[in-house]
Image 1 (cartoon, protein in one colour):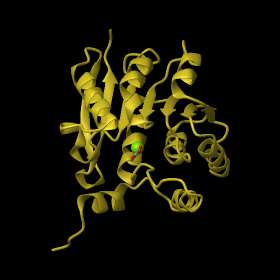
Image 2 (tube, rainbow, N blue to C red; image 1 turned 90 degrees about the horizontal axis):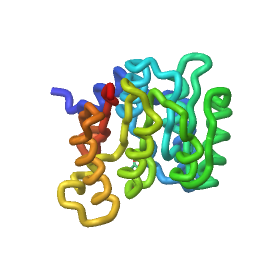
Image 3 (cartoon, rainbow, N blue to C red; image 1 turned 90 degrees about the vertical axis):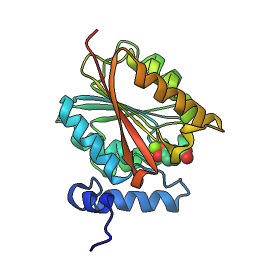
Length: 213
Ligand code: DHB
Ligand code: MG
């Protein structure tokens, strides 16, 4: 019997990674950035979610070198827009270069700076999909802030909500904040949510849909 894992099998069928994205990931690693871009199954989940909600406007919090940004920009229709927030100026610079070489600069607008400041400047904007993938201790506040930037039917995806199971018995600030985030998401009266395993069960992404008020 084949020892191919579910992730390998599914990514063989549905991968979101092509040669260009693999090349950008290799280049980013050479430039000293951490290799913590979304795995192919999470990229594919984002693509499916964008299609499911018919997204034309996307907000991303935490872009690293633009890997998930490019996946989502590609899934937007012509005229769609993606605003992405990145605190690290070096990451934002590399990401802008990558967005340009991926031919997605017309759709993507990078806001470099602390996410909470950029979120304040986005007041009154409405996004069809929000992807949270930034500093883990900020997740609970990001959720509260992005809820004000959604509409009924909007989708909120959050990466890294299992973190090797550390959320069950949190011993650091990141795990504690993610545990709190998961608790809020699971009980939130305005959200219909689930959690999907990634990285062979080592991590997970949560997916929420905003209910009608
Ligand atoms: C970390 C952050 C991520 O967004 C991720 O997908 C994996 C790890 C981290 O900071 O450790
Ligand atoms: Mg992540």
